[in-house]
Structures are given as C-alpha cells and as structure tokens.
Image (tube, rainbow, N blue to C red; front, side, top):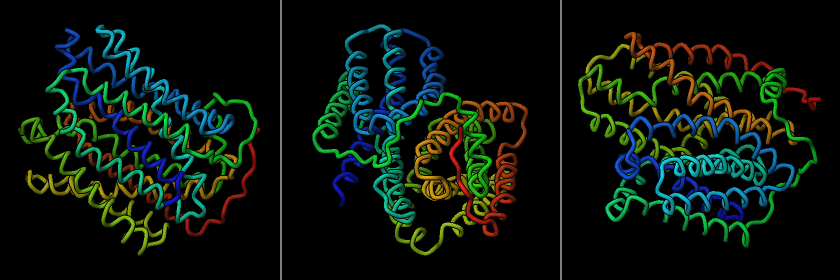
Length: 391
C-alpha cells in the first residue's frame, strides 16, 4: 500500500474516534456540569453551523498553503481542545472547546482532497473513497462500547484518550506524510459559497450529478435523525429498541462495505449502472417503508436500505470530481460538504414537522428520489462538459 494512503487511513480513523467521542458521554455530562439535557444538546446545532462555516475555508487553505500544513494546524487545535475540556470544569469552556474542535475537525475533508490527489484514475478514486467510508461505518458499531468502558473510570477519561490520538496524528503527519498537492495555485479565498454553487450548476452533466446527489442526501436527512422517535410514536417501542435497530443498520452497512463494495459493486458494475441501482433501489425501499405496517417487515426494510447509502458517496463524489476541472476539484468537494452539513440541520426540521402532522416522511423521501431519477435518466445521452474558470 502507498505510504501516503496508509497515513491518510490512519489519520482518518483517529479523526473519526475524536468526532464521535462526545455522543456516548452526553448523559454523563449532564450530571458532571450540572446542566439540563436541553443545554447539552446545543452542541448539535453548533456542530452543523461549524461544519458549514469551516469546511470551505479549510479546504481552500489546504489548496493555497499546502495540505500538510493546514492538516497539521487543525490537529494541533484539536489537541488543545481535548486538553482544555478535562482541565476546566465549566460548561461554557466545554462548549467553546468543542466549537474549536468542530471547526478544525473538518480537516477530514482535507483528507478526502488528499485521496483525490493520490488517486490516478476514477476507478482508483472510488476504491480509495470506499476504504475510508468503510472505516467510518465500522467505527459506528464499536465506538459506543469503547467509550462506555472508559466512562466507568471517569467522565473526562475519553477526552484524555482523544488528546493522545491527536498527538499521534501530529507525529505521523509531521514526520511521515509527504505533501500530495501537485496542483497548488495561489488565489484569493472565496467566501461566497452560493456564487460557486451557481457557477458549477452551469456546467452540463456536472449539474445533474450535483442536484441528484443533493436530492438523495435530502431523502436520508429527512428521517435519519428522528427514526427513534418515529419508531416510538408509530410502533410504541422503547428507545433502546430504536438504537438496536440503528446499530443493526450500521452493521449491515459495514458488512456491505467490507465484503461487497470492492469485490462486487465496484467490480461488476460501471459507475453509470451504480447510479441507476442507487436511485431505483432507494425509490423501491422508500416506497416500501411508506406502505409497510408490520414492525418486523418495516425494520428489515429499514436495515437493508443503508447499503444503497453506502454506495452514494464513493460513486457520486467520484463522478462529480471526474467532470470537474483539476484546479477546481477542491472547490466542488467543499461545496458538496457544506451543503451536506447545512442539510444535516435544515432537513431534519422538516422531518419533525411531517412527523408531528402524521404525514409520511418516507413518501417525501421517495419523492426526492423520483426527482433524482428524472435527472439521471438524462446523463447517458449528455456530452462531457466544457469547463471554464469562474471570475
């Protein structure tokens, strides 16, 4: 394996640990800081806001001032954040430290830029992205158990481990990582996100991939964050049952990533075929979720929906990058990521409204997928875009 690829996989893994460390500690933080559960959950809103603001800035800085420097700076800030939290015992300091960490944690998207840098073809890029997203899925299964064990010792113990992981990252990046950005250009930092979105949407074929990607992500964002409440309200099940269902879903996703993605999906099908499989498969599954009544059938359909979600990022992002001019690839990636982070906050609000009004969330998700299908049906017949640099 290429040395840079191995380093990126290692750093990505440690970053994922640092990201999800806070979720299992939330109940313990309520008593530790003597605040309400409502106060503790403010971090969710801040998370989406930090992601939306930080992603484009960090990505552009990595393109202008080298990926290694910005990546190293981000991890150093994460280390400081991890040390501050257990030292100071006030909730306000905790919130500020987490904000610092969330701003700098979005260096994981710089890691995606590095994956793009070192991938020599579209096929290799898809496989490399599959590897890092497969690790993301597997970590979703194991992190609750690890942090639950650490919490038995002390509420702040996980944060000291987080600091240790950040220190390891710093040493690895500083002494082993080789700069991967071979297309560095000096340019002004762009803060007008919407101007860049409009410019990319003018590029034929690329605009279809972007809109289709956004529609599919929207279909998932509508229900993912409120599925425990949906199950509780419609089937009168416990919250613990809902979390078991989510864990089973991520397990199926991880197994798909490990055994099927590289050996079946990416090997047996072209990218265009995978795009159609994703869209038509999701349409069928969302329609089934909207009409199925028995709990056991609903749960099975919900669980086996996620493998299609696993295909989404590697396939779509690889295609989008393929039809973007090389010097603008960093920009299209942060545009996509910023839109996803904004959707993580906005679309669940619509999901809450639909659930409160007893309107099927999954019919709306199916509608978004149907709109995506209308768009992707045009892709095959369209010529590759002619790219130009925006003013």
